[in-house]
Image 1 (cartoon, rainbow, N blue to C red):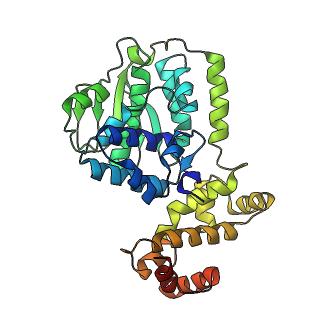
Image 2: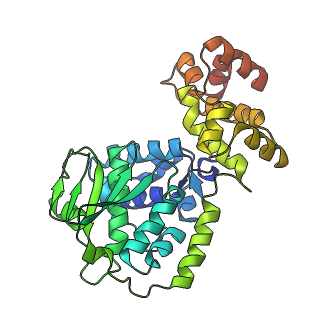
Image 3: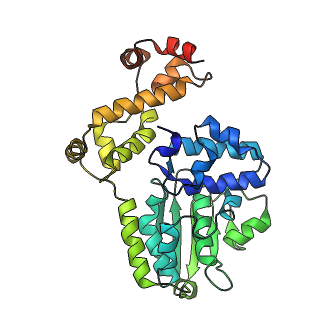
Length: 330
């Protein structure tokens, strides 16, 4: 399976950074090819990119550009409509507040590890982006603000913004995305909007279209369902390197029980163990292609606590040792 065929992050996220890198003069083709991604695949809205693959592409593009603000520049390379259902869901929320709340409910459709939390704090509305990576959180928060700013006459300016990342080198870019009052190297990634902004009507908002988009987002974001095996693969891709890719942990990430997950996988004609075995094999082949990794490191990355167990599994998959397979594939 190609990297761009696995359920994971919306391809639009990667495309925005690729466009920003291209504008910076980066030759993106070889970087995408390293991860098994064709440039044309990024123009297919049905595609998703495995999370670990997308993370590697993002890191390589930033390194190649030499621009620590590339994540932020990518926001301005993603016009309204780029995120399809999610963009139109927010734009048809009647008011800014209604649109933000709709996005918060379905933000995991964009990236399963992103969380947009909306709370009332004093006389303002707080939008807090939850993500492990400060750069990813800043990108997602800026993208959210830009979606509404672009729909409003005169734009949108937060009361204040806090970001965990280092200060942007491009002050004008930061001003356009976050407003004039930004605290860098803060404890959270958040923006505050006043009541006047929160209640501003969204031009051309259509309540019926909003409901239709919510229904579509609901289908895209279902933790279980028609593409359950793909969602299990996504969870395994995140958990394998941690050594915690067991049935219970995967079921927890999908919002279901282990027994229910097993039953639904059986109905889909597969099983958790079969998917786990296949994902370990694919991950092993991918990591063995990296000469910088030792066999012990590869074993750990695919979820084996020791090299011996990994050797036995690989022998079963390919009929030869991982070392010999690596040499023959070189």
